[in-house]
Amino acid sequence: KNEVEQSPQNLTAQEGEFITINCSYSVGISALHWLQQHPGGGIVSLFMLSSGKKKHGRLIATINIQEKHSSLHITASHPRDSAVYICAVSGGGADGLTFGKGTHLIIQP
Amino acid sequence: NAGVTQTPKFRVLKTGQSMTLLCAQDMNHEYMYWYRQDPGMGLRLIHYSVGEGTTAKGEVPDGYNVSRLKKQNFLLGLESAAPSQTSVYFCASSYSNSHQPQHFGDGTRLSIL
Image 1 (cartoon, rainbow over the protein chains, first blue to last red):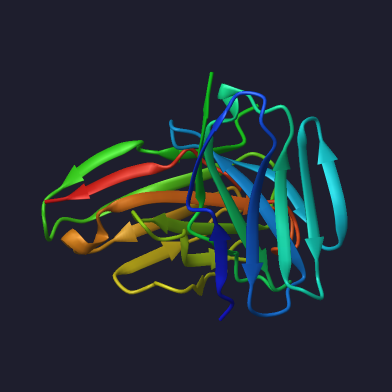
Image 2: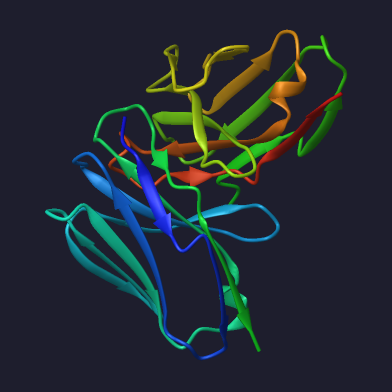
């Protein structure tokens, strides 16, 4: 069973700061997912990646397969980025995702 | 553009009662999943389905049953609810296997007294 660890668990930053959230996993994967969960509870998929780097707006996700590590970066952070960010991995089969516990991010104005 | 719809959104049950949570998706996805989310833990897979008429157990299947009679619907049943099943339940779907992005419903908050 893959073990997915995220750090930090909680992060409070000022608006405009560059944010980094880290994710490591124990067993080789076929893809890594970054998800966002807002205070209202809904979960949205941000990225799915198996190598390299992806960018969407102010969000950037990177993955290093050899080191079993991924990072999610937020540039020019804004209070609306406040949410729980969840890392999840898949082995390529049908049996769903294995999730980290999430990083609770608060961006203060 | 409904996506994945879960009903109900909230429910309170007494120990021993039964209920069914409904998940419906309108994206013609083959794969559907039920997860539970508990404080201090990551989401955990309860059951999943790779197509109409098929179901399989996930990480924490005990106390739950599922059915996928129609491609667009995935039902999660609690036959005899227990306080340990108090949780937030999320349904998700994807076009094919877990190498595809998953689309999540808004969740069902279930309390067992």
